[in-house]
Length: 332
Image (cartoon, rainbow, N blue to C red; front, side, top):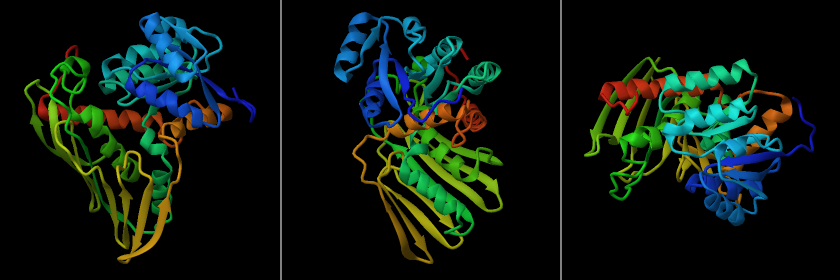
């Protein structure tokens, strides 16, 4: 359904965890959406979350949340292994869905979710928030305009040293732990944004930790024609969190963390040609929420910035990498 220009998405937030707090906080900066309801697994948690964010409705179950007729779209911020069931719950209630990355634990799960959404003509999008950050949009613009010539090399890494807690979602196999799904998907998605999601070959190295999940890794993706992406990620290893794009006539540096950058620099023939500066005060999650609003207003069922086919191809790539490592999660 195409909405009028004054339409604002009434968001239901499924989860009361850290990432849900970030999303709810930033919704205040979204021009076309508001936080309307939150759902948790108990009333106390839902009430506290609603009070902290000025949300008018709080539910003790996810089922009550998705069945609220006033809710237009559901944001899912639960741990990875619950994404498939949570997304299907919301879709079966007829809601638009924005689901945290990784979309699901593996591509088979995502195929099931995408199939349902497409069959019922419902909006579905992966919450890869970095894709919608203005500095990364400017990178796409520079590349499309061939400002650095033909792109040949992408370098990106994302890593931090988490505290040792074998039961945390970062290190627990039962919660889909490990660097690849939590942080590795970011540099992989960045490379996909530039080269597409279908490398011709994948080479990788990995350090498997005591809990049986990957603590840090490196990937070398070859796309043919001299096009390569060198990517790394870690949850027990600090990294620079930078991204650089090299072309035949220049290069681009995404300053600071490329996941949520505030600036980017364009160099042509070794000289600084242009700088993009983002003076926003928001965290950055508002941009993905606004994309959902734009798509719903236009009657779209997926975002042209990150299509469902691309999200599915990226998850298949993650499956291939894990197969190289022999890493499978409980229930797979």
